[in-house]
Length: 212
Length: 361
Image 1 (spheres, rainbow over the protein chains, first blue to last red):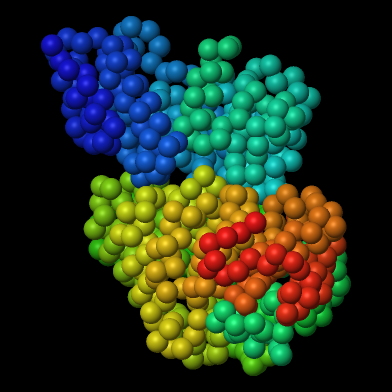
Image 2: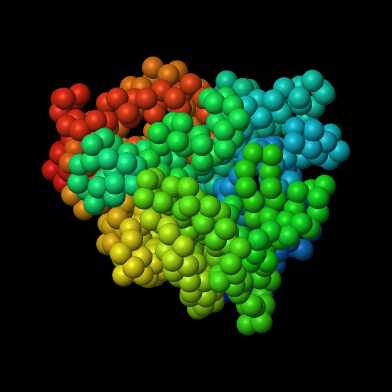
């Protein structure tokens, strides 16, 4: 009987190679991929998220665990495919036009990928038109936008309005985040969710998928 | 007392004639709205600003055009950066793809004479009159943004710490030579740019900060002090858990006591005001962008009351006077500093926070 706690602990430690190896061993021992995910990897990543939000883990620890999750997921993917869908959903992300600092967006991207999302990163300085085009041309479930500066925050509302004007608003859920963005502001502009930090963003993305 | 004397006193935690003010960046749009047609230097004279800042990224780094349509440039370290509609170069692609790349890497030459042209001009105009601050990008920031990229840098701090330290040492050597040259040309003070924290807290644990951040900052501080100049460390974000370590490196001042991260000038004064000069902390986010001049006047007075007693305060924005700042708000801030920042502050305020008292309110 394979002990999934060892896998979970390896992920929490951020041991990328060991976590991938253990995921493979678990498969070899006959544990279903879905069970490895649900009882080993996801509880591990939840614990990493808790430690990050409580100030015990910082960006380096969060990112190596995120990478460990990603590599282990890649190992499980063929088996998960046989059982059905391999991705949680499709997420498109970007920092709004005129903005600097993309560190928050990069870490959210990494954490989403670790949690099984297929993420398309449009990068920084992304125009309203480019966000609309991405939503129009593909089948993303969630659009995530980041704005750091008080001068660029209005771009979030502008993009939501542009999505409405083009009849695309119902096609996608919209999440926003960034230093000066607040939950109240997110509600005011009609976003579906607000991510306070990378871990919160993943939780909110999951919640949106349950709701939709 | 002139701007240089005022700034020197404040950094030494002595009372000047009034609390000094300067900004590292005052956007041209704001300057033009306040007094059209002035050069940056003339604007500083017009507004009676006590110091002038020269960010190394803008005045002493070389950029090579890569793609005009996309606004992509190669910075002097070899990374691809994008100049956005609002801001300076944003990292797009770091220079190193592997550890091997660094083995063959040739550092830029800090001794190239053109790097100091702007500083020479500034020295000629303001030496002995206004404080001349040379901006030096933090070693951590350069390694993170230009050499490795943020995600790889953070992971390498765990997985390949030796590489992070090797690159940091090389960048430190460059910066020490840059500082030496700036001092020879006539820089008065140094301002180390580069964040260690975000709004919720530091990017790395205090333990990692001690290993990867502080040794390089300390080396720069020691060099600057050996040359009998002074240094300020800037970092946005919620910095409390790293504050003791930063103070222990010997920095003379810390900017900006970030109000958007919930940091309070009074708390900083009460805890650290007997050890270092505090710089800041007028919010350049919502307050200076969307607030009213009256709200700015109130916030500036609170900053003076909380941080000014005994000297040791340079009153300035929490980051810069960027293009979104309302010009009348910047005017309100400067006028308030000039009017209510005159010592003795007891003439203007009750309940001044006492440096190092541990009590703030």
